[in-house]
Each structure stands twice: as structure tokens, then as C-alpha cells.
Amino acid sequence: MNLLIDECLHTSLVAVAVARGHQASHVNWLGLSGEADWNLMPRIIGDDFTFVTNNAADFRRLYAQQPLHAGLVIIVPQVPPAEQRELLEIVLDEFREGGDPVNEAIEIRIEDGEAVIERYSLPDPDEA
Image 1: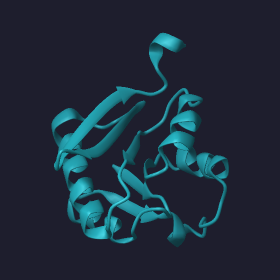
Image 2: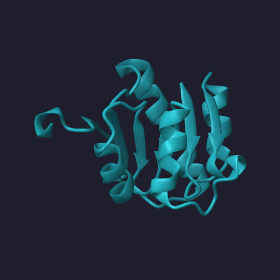
Image 3: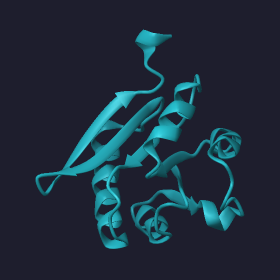
């Protein structure tokens, strides 16, 4: 899997993904920092990235318009880098167990001190 980490998340998430056998890069390293969300989409789709972000509202909407994509990962809480890395590790376990997130979104959040994953189709096939 080829992950692209959004600028709202720490660059150290790249090392987490690479250590687990994935390809990964960070928006900042591709010279895309400061780009509007909709301007990132052609690169995300064109390079077949699974995009990892904290920006749920904008990217849910943008991904809902894509007929085919490599997946969206949303780390919901604003947490320090060490916790971001832990949450990404959990998501990578989910990939191993549940398969690649083609045309899916995976949201991870913390509820009552526990990580909770929600996985769903995006775009929603019932709305097509």
C-alpha cells in the first residue's frame, strides 16, 4: 500500500508505515504543503495513494465524488505525535485483517480511552 500523510499529521507517521512494509510519503515532502484540499485530490488519485488525514469533513466530501480510490484514513482526534503513531499502527493492523481500503474510509477515534475503528464505503453505493 502507498500512503500519503497529510500536513495536519506528524511526519513520523511515514516511518511507522514504512516499518510495517508500506510505501509512504508526507504532503510536505512532495512540495504540496499549503495546497487547498481539492488541489491535492488529483495527486492522491493519480498516484494511487491511501490518504491519511485529520481533516474529516473536507476529505469525506471530496472522496465521495471519486468513483475509484485507494482509501481514506481519518485520525479523528487531535492528539500528540506519539498517539498519532499508535493510532496509525492500529489502522495498519486493520488493513492486515480487513484488506486494503479500496473505495472505503477508515476512521479511528478514541472513546472512553479506547481506540474505535469505523470502516465504511465511500462513496456510499446506496447513494450512487
